[in-house]
Image (cartoon, rainbow, N blue to C red):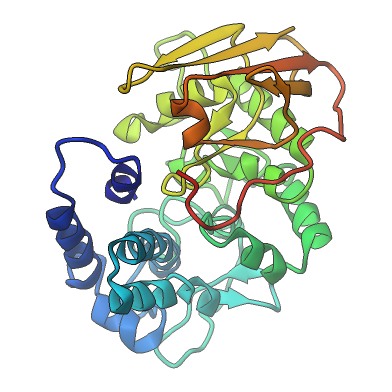
Amino acid sequence: PVIVDAYFKNLRGIDFSLAWEAVKASSTTPHRNSPFHILDKYGYFPENLQSQSVSLGLEIAYDDWCAAQMAKALGHTEEYEYFNKRSGFYKNLFDKKTGFFRAKNDKAQWIEPFSPLVYGGNGGYPFTEGNGWQYLWYVPHQVKTFIRLLGGKNSFNKKLDTFFTLKAKPEDVNGNASGFIGQYAHGNEPSHHIAYFYDYSGKPWKTQYLCAKIMNEQFTDTPSGYSGNEDCGQMSAWYILSAMGFYPFNPANGVYAIGSPQLKKAVINLENGNKFTVITHNAGGKNCYIQKAKLNGKKYNKSYITHNDIVSDGTIEFYMGDKPNKKWGKTAPPATAWQY
């Protein structure tokens, strides 16, 4: 995802022909925890052949989507078709009966017993530092398909509501888990996009509420101010972006889902010499809900902005209040294609 994002943003000083070869090699050459020959054979990782099979299968499906987008842009049709097909393999792990992604063995049988509440560690279990509830949402690249997989928007939203309210049981929780809001665990980075799902499912005011709640409850100005480890700078990156009011739900498609801006003013000084300014009226406190917005002085009713909006030397203004405006943000983010 990092290389593909850099390619579409046209970052200078990178040989993208070599970068593509690196992307292709790292996505096809078997290595530790990535036996791609097994994935190609079965369409998933059987848990008896590769532990952490569900977490790996979901994360690699997203990686493959990223590789497919770069292949397509470079005109590599065969590689595009290969990676695009593999990016849908996550569906092979979805159990319609339980409504969760689950582990299978090499006989295509579900691994029993199964509870979406039980955590795994680093190996020896289908889920890595998480559980079935948390990894259910790791499909940032095919959102419309995923919503249909869960039964449509109504069923999807009900399940997402349950996710943020169903309390964890102490006997099920792994020591790595932290930062709970229901089953949501902000201490583990694969959860970080989930609060923004409501932008895609027609209820952006719930994204606004949850983003403000996470920022207010999961971050403090103390030595232990993060709810989890600062892996690759992700904890602070999530906060900085979310405090400005937007977040890269799918980091490689050029779209930033809008949440709940907390800063009165923020200015991003861009490499091209332009500036992108964020101004938030009535920021902070209980005013977590967007009442209206303007982009470059014009009424704005989308629950996202694009990379092009940011680099084009503009200003976005948010007007906040303490009650949701359910009419704002009706235009959902694009669910798949990159928007640079």
